Each structure stands twice: as structure tokens, then as C-alpha cells.
Length: 128
Length: 206
View 1 (cartoon, each protein chain N blue to C red):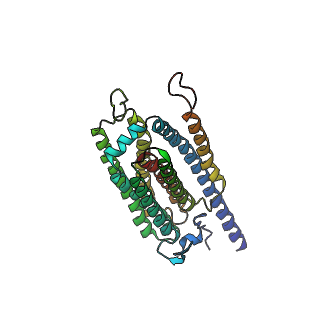
View 2: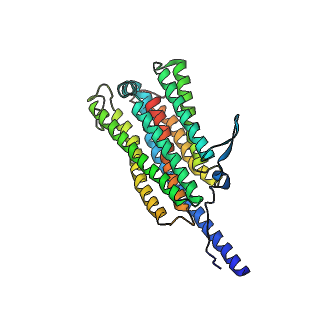
View 3: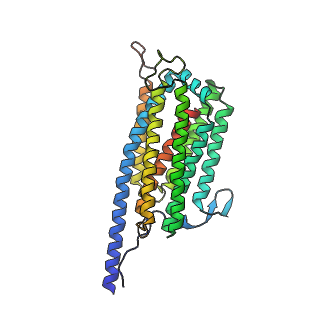
């Protein structure tokens, strides 16, 4: 009897092998690749939405429409990045410490950007 | 018999712990990459706020058709990557090689797209050394644009080489019992995809 160990992926869990997946508002669907194919479809649709929003509102360079456009684009972008990290990089199942490794530097950089945007470009400019 | 079973269980635990350590180390590496990319993105954002006209000129001169196509290619390569991992964990080496081949080919297509885009930008005199005195239309956009996008492109290039190595090892049967190497490459490739998702919105759409 062999004691050879077969270690299948520890986070790529069993449901990832299933072609049947429960989708919110739609119910249970069966598609080759299961959850991964569904996420790919969602990423494609979100990218299309981003491009359409950006193109339709590209003439607005300031004012409330520009702000709304920017908020929509960044929100969609963050959702897309979140889906890849959560499902494709398996943060959903992995050790929560991995989330911190990703989030902490991102928060520090966000704070730095906000601070740097207030630093005057030239002498005598003062802080905004 | 019970001894053999216990020995097997202990080895199983040992390999699992080893895999977890490898993943922690890889995530720490990705954490350092977050900082590097974030600094370049920060530089671009500050330029974007202070020189909105230069970015507006870029958008109206170049358009987004090519870069949108490139974005879809990178998203599709991420899908191929996760399907390759799925295939190898299900013990299907043929499908694994097919999906991994897709990852590598799409990575190469992305780089070709980026090269075409850079040529277009060079014709517009958007260069690393240009500033407001040498290029009135785009000012110092070149450095802020090329730093994050080229650094990302370099990651795609390394990813293609890394992917070829994973394919070779997979073909040799190296991952049949423990596909951790494929999972680590997957983390790298998806991270490159996530960075591009952010860069695409920040540089080309906003």
C-alpha cells in the first residue's frame, strides 16, 4: 500500500468544480465552468457599461455630470477588481490575513494621495 | 495499516501547511507590488488633477477602441487562467494545457496591442522626457502615463514567461498531485489583471 499523498488545491474548493451555480435574481443555472464563467460574463458586461458611460458622457469635463460619471466609472472598476480578487484569487475561501495584505497598502496609498492633492504645486500656492 | 494511514495523514498535513506558507509568501510579494503600482498611480492622479487639459487631449487624440479590446483580452486570459487551475485540480492535464496556452497567447496579444498603442503615442510626441515647454498639447503626461502602463506591460511579459514554465511543468506531470504552482501563477496573473482594471478606468476612461 502506498502512502503517497495527493493534495488537491486547498482553496479551490469542491463547488468550483460544479457547473451548476446559483445566480442572484436568476436562480440556478448550469454552464460549463460554473461560477468562473458567470463571473467572466459579469466582468464583460461591466466593462461594456464602463465604456458606454465613458463615451456617452465624454463631453462633460466638469460639473455634477462629470462627478457622477467619475463616481460610476470608479465604482464599476472597484466592483470588477473585487470580483476578480474574491472569486478568481480565492480570497473568498482563503485565510483572511491575505485580505489585510491587499487592503492595508491600498488604504495607506489612498490617504497619501488625498494628502498630496492638497500640497501646493509652486511656492506661495497655499493648501487647498 | 493504521500506522501507514497516520503517516499519510501527517504527510498530507505537512504538504497542506507548506502550500499555505507558499501562498502567504506570494501574497506578501503581491502586497509589495500593490505599493509599487500605487505610487505610480498616485503620481498619475496628481498630474490628472493638476493638468486636466493634457489628459483630455490624450483621450481625444487616441480613442479607446484598441485599449478596450486589450482589456477584454486580459479579462479573457484571467478566465482562461482560472479554468486551467480548475482543469488541473480535476486531473485533466490536456484541458489544463489548452487553457494555459490560451493564457500565454492572450498575454502576447496584449503586449502587441500595447506596442501598437505606444507607437501611436510616439507619433504624437508623447515621450518620457517631454514637458510643458517641449510639448504644449500633452505637457509632462508621457512620464506619468508610461511609468504605470509600461511597468504593467513588463509584468505581462514576465507572466508570459512564468506561464510557459508552468505549462512545461504541467505537461511533465509536476502538478498532478499538488497544483500549488499553478495556483501561485494564477495569483500573479489575476493580480496583473486587477491592476489593469484600475489603470484602464483611471487613465483611459476618467
